Length: 364
Ligand SMILES: [Fe+2]
Ligand SMILES: [Fe+2]
Image 1 (tube, protein in one colour):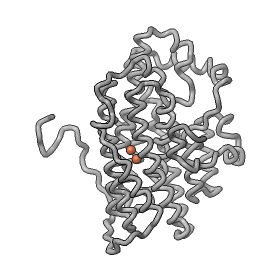
Image 2: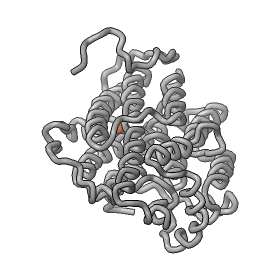
Image 3: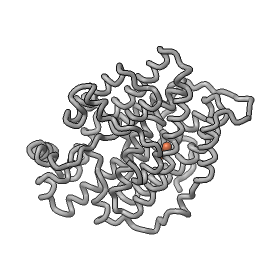
Image 4: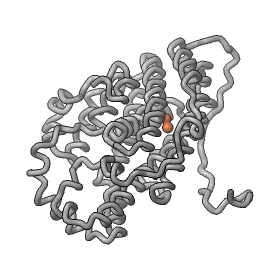
């Protein structure tokens, strides 16, 4: 434990937010489906210290099965394969440390947004549910912090993620908070957690992600159910604003044409590990076609999950789909994204009926 002080050296200066706090004087159940997931959430609470065996060290060899989050298999390039085993492990550890640190910071953002929703949403059942999510997110921060410290060190938050969290915390519109957090950030997180949970063979990480992903499926479900209920009540201008908020959030994280892209952070990590980023990139570029040839088509988190979620909520007009297609096409392979918006939309899968089962890999 560090010494108790009022101002801590690690805190940020306060962020001004514009949230309105809403009292609700009726305590009767008011949104049945939210009351149901609130009850479910209270039943599925878990205790990080008791339910996960933290005495285990991280298994290095098994850890190497953990996906690093690239659309391209960088670890299959000849440059990567020629690296010393020790250098390779160091590189994996640092890159995974960066990715997991950002999961951790994202969890802190979710903790704060969920607690804001307790204040800002007007329905009693929505307040109750947000209270359980707040508890869940505290636990997620707890477990990711513990794991990252075992693996590497906690690295600073990536700029694009910080921008989304700031915008979601700062808006005075509770529906935008739901769209920014439960739909976009948690949608992206759920897709990544699922992939990591199902592919990693590292036992401690797998255990932790099993618990976390189950909670996240519920958080995402809260956003989908609540927003779907709200949409028919909104006018066109309000719908457009919400759609644009979702688009802006997804684009901030994914669009490399914007100033602070994640690739710059990743390249800095390669350098830290003694790797020349331009050599690795050149090799990846040369071997790209061959390596991508036999890989199963992976839609990625936006097209594969966030867009289906927006569609389900009634937040995907043709107008906004065109914008999504444009920026994904500029960043990813046209072969996967689709050459035009019709092809793009034809590839968008339906949102799984049961996301909790989907996360555990039991349903596609
Ligand atoms: Fe979480
Ligand atoms: Fe969450």
